[in-house]
Amino acid sequence: SVYFISFYGVLIDSDMIQNVVQTDIKEVKDLLNLKLILFVVLALLLVFYVVKVKIDYYGSFKSHLKIKIINIISGLIVVCAVLIPLSKTFLPFFRNYNEIRMYNTPFYQIYAVYRYYVRFVKAKPEFKTIANDAYRENNHTKKLLVLVVGETARAANYSLGGYAKNDTNFYTKKDNVVFFDNFSSCGTATAVSLPCMFSISKRENYSSSEFQENAMDVLYKTGVDTAWFDNNSGGCKGVCDRLAYKQKLSSDLDENLLAPFKEKLNHLSDQNILVLHLQGSHGPTYYKRYPSEFKKFTPTCDTNELSKCDNEALINTYDNTLLYTDYLLSEIIKLLKEQKSYESSLFYLSDHGESLGENDIYLHGMPYAIAPSYQTRIPAIFWSNDEKLMNLAKEHKGLKLSQDNLFSTLLGYFDVKTSVYEPEYDLLNPKLKANP
Image 1 (cartoon, rainbow, N blue to C red):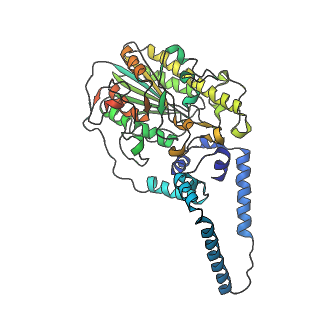
Image 2 (cartoon, one colour):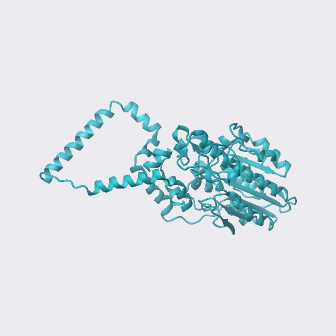
Image 3 (tube, rainbow, N blue to C red):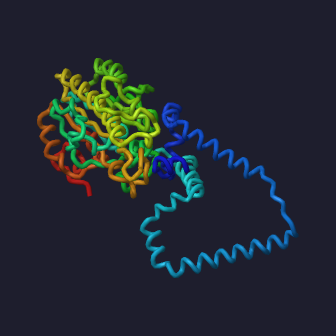
């Protein structure tokens, strides 16, 4: 905890404990470096020394106990004498900045482990079904929606959104995609954001301990052909567990998803949703997320010790990952243009953003209430061969939107009728309203 707090500026809460438990060997290897190993070894040596050192006590037990009690009482008196006169300053400070308790290592981290146990390890309630009244109204138009879920992409570095340093959207600009200007994530880590965006719950009332169906389940049980292609080291976080068609890869390069994706395009039903879950811009080894031909912005940061790189090199490396993802989106759009008998669309959004050293904070996973906007503002892109849908997306691109909109957007795209569908949250419905 001390290492990651000190060198990456992250905080260890129950969501971060969840990330640790759900990680894999590939992700762990990307975080390992000599500095971390030395830090852990030296810390263990210090602990070993403290445990082994022999302490000699002189005098009786009663006299030692008396001294300790006097020391404790004296310490409390000193603390009270200092804090009481300053209470008008300290009490509002701790009330307004209660996140400071998260720096109390190791006590807060022990509490975080306990909170994780309560939320995820204790016996779960009975699995809950949702939208039991759901049915599809329009069974005549053949539809194909490709939903691409990115990893660790932040809106601040998208040239479609006005970013000027590097052209990170060189490819999709040619496809005249719609970029939503003000789109927010549900969390700051995949373990929260991914299940949350597919959940019927909104960010304000979502709980990671939810044990119920999601949007993919609703589409599946109403007859939509669902397929999930995953290259993310953390997997689908339970979202795809009940789907019939799933493929899991473990590759540094997301382009390896295209082969099984193309194969699925040859065996489509009348109603189809294909989800591609990317490795995207997952750090800290950003330089591993793209092939050499996409090393367009230089110099780069080719190490997982981000503090060793200057800011320009770090940002260039990160921007290369975005450019590579942009290329993949453009390739998918090319394939969709070939599906002329279908109403074909692509919707891309990231799970959460990323900090790149601003205020000495790196990576992601900060508690949402105090997370910088770099971790919560995410890119969202739409393309369709249906002119009406494109016009609706263009009308809505400037609204305040979020991952709360995904649930009803997916149901609305496939004309699913149910009491839990909310047209005011459907990105492609004229009744869409800005998020509160």
